[in-house]
Image 1 (cartoon, rainbow, N blue to C red):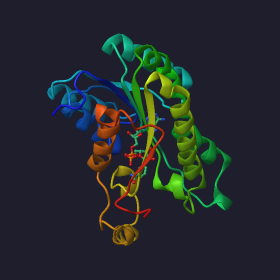
Image 2: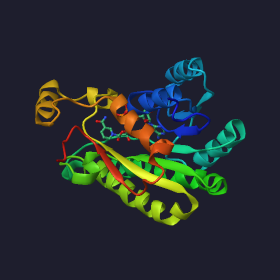
Image 3: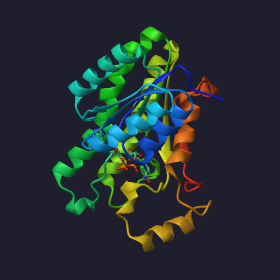
Image 4: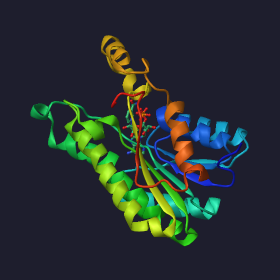
Length: 248
Ligand code: NAD
């Protein structure tokens, strides 16, 4: 069943990892995809091609999620080219981990800008269109770390916790216009972002997860599919933990 037939989705940070998984699953379900990336032009061209081959419209945009102006430009181009904006997935994110003692002001600010301000930028940019359409689904990528906190990630945890407060507020503000705003809190998902971690540490994490494995981008994409589709028309303001039971 094509759950997203005829819908247009914007997905930020989609040239690899979770964002790429979301773009692939959404396209398989019939959605037209506008995705962003920060620097990897080649990977973006490849993904664009792959999505088009699935029979949907697709375009990659080199657009910095942390820039308010670029978010505005992106949304107006997508509206003009695709005709609607039905789903927004704020997925772009970075880490700059360090103990607070060693964390620089620059590393704090950068993580807040890319992870949290980006959500404000993009939500503002699509809001008018979704209000006019009287429908829309906004999905914001937080983390178990945003729910629980984590030593060595005060900047990242603050940005991801901020996303939860922001999303719940938006759900309250524009629910009356049939615009939904939800959060996904992934646990440990094995992607390029986590490849740089020590294998021994990673094995320890896998063992501590009730389902005894790290998640895949597809695990997260399927949860996004539910929130993007009309299967979830009565779900808003929620945080969905997709973590193999990690926070249980
Ligand atoms: P990743 O590093 O593999 O991918 C991140 C993507 O964001 C990349 O495509 C990158 O180009 C893009 N990006 C970074 N800065 C950007 C910017 N300024 N503008 C536009 N795009 C930008 O990471 P991932 O593991 O796929 O994570 C995706 C999201 O899920 C992130 O928000 C991350 O915090 C969150 N998350 C990941 C995990 C995990 O275990 N992998 C767990 C919880 C939450």
